[in-house]
Image (cartoon, rainbow, N blue to C red; front, side):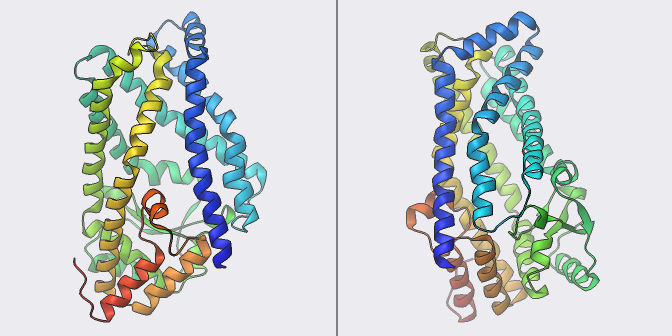
Length: 370
């Protein structure tokens, strides 16, 4: 099992790097080949209106990337998952999901890009912070509608039929001061053998979601431990903290772009508001965002550790916590004890070995800082 997990993990790490480099390569070739300018000329000859120009330019560019990336995506999310026995999904269903992802991704992209270029045109000295506020506001709205509009596109919701488990979850939420709409199950097994549970949504849309792969393979105690961890995030206000952190990072990225964009775009003989420069904007944003990944992962790992600690203190189910971690590692093929650099670059959760050690230390009375 350990060798299988290591092989799977190494493939996933390598593919993540390859996909990122491949995206940058596509953007570089698109820009330096002159295709970006040619595409803008072609689209602008049909659509003079800026809104439609940006819309169809983005549609063509996004479609081009989707097609070029499809073989790599097929290998990553279909071939590899079948090879390691993590899915039995048929190809027609897989490609249908990819088309849905394309449509959802394009809707999100076009809203952000239309807003970005609008602020760029009409607020040339202040676009960086106005665009940041717009993106932040949109991300909050997206988090609110995600469980209501997006999840149902890929999975079917149904209320869990295990009334005893539902009662335990609602009681746990009440004891931890979390108000939830309902407890649902989604049909994860038709796409993957991996297991998960989450507290999704904001405000009145907040709900517990269990995958059927979790409910079928984990005991009620283990499920309660998982949800105690999820509820701990809300109790510790991690969602608010992450929203503030992401807002600060978006502001930082846009400020860096604001200061450097003039020099960068002059090398391409492009105006900042020229849609033909979209590939340059995406390239710069992607590189800056990638540079911040180690910091974001470190912050996320600390939040996850704090949520583990609070969950352990609250429900005090040591054996359930440890067995749950072991099961998740085996079922999801998650590396238990990665190398330092793998942890820094790829892990936004503490490795399983560290999480188990935290539980063991707590119950042995070893001091753990809050």
